[in-house]
Length: 353
Image (cartoon, rainbow, N blue to C red; front, side, top):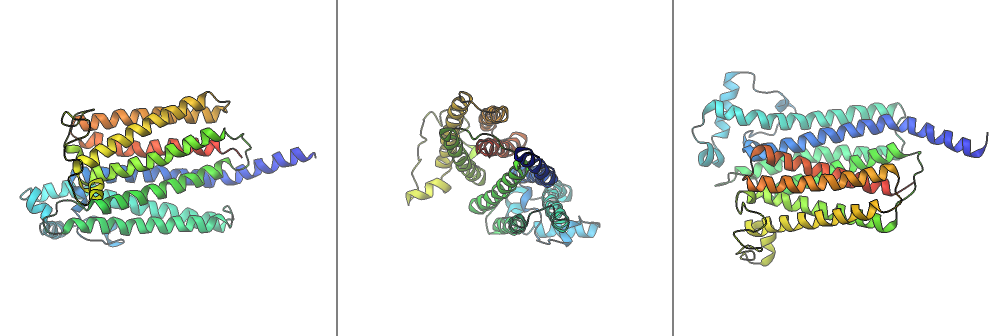
């Protein structure tokens, strides 16, 4: 058999071996997308502080008796959010926020199970290369750490006079979720494409897409501070903020670096600016890429990136102008993950072999 035929047969065998593992990891990305969206909904509805206990095992079961419901409600009545926001809303009101947070935590537990059991099975069956096992095991540990960080974030909302979690802890929780998502997606793409030999995109396009990914990540982090400070509830006009391009009081805090994370006006302006720069860079990168001799897959990825960025920008403006309703706010957070997905897929496909 000619050497080229042997090489083609080897690549085909590699694809067949890797693709079940890649499909599993793509499924994990879908589950992570859901949990990130649920996290946005719990934040927007104020549900995140409704469960006062961190019980990784026992907490998987919902309250099974009226006595247990009253016990949990009694715990919730001890925190400032109840006194300052929800006082007197009754057991039924408590249940309405409890179930959303409980679903968010349960989905996180299911992600852990859906990751660990196939990992063990694929490893025992020899379907995962020995070099990949430590990486996947590390991602499982990172997922467990994310649960602990989630409780660390929630606990910050129990402090005196606090009705929400710390913006800093919220952003840490968000960053870890996105790192986990990106690492699993990149690994899945590598496995799916292993054994193929596509041509690499021009270096200038790869650099542009890489910078777009980095700027997008920074924009999402800035959005985390917007969420943590509830900055979207003010300056609900676009493109001006209270009739100004740069809002009054942009640098009113000292030292000046505090404005980047603690000043509502500055935080919202920065997110707007970063989002606009990301949209412009992504549009320019897509325009440049489509003028190159790209493969069908690479062109499709660039078009998906351009479309996702444009839709997310419009969704962000709509969310702001309508003063952050739960539906649009949740959609905006989920769409950010889809934009990140499109950017990472485009970058991966441009790497060639």
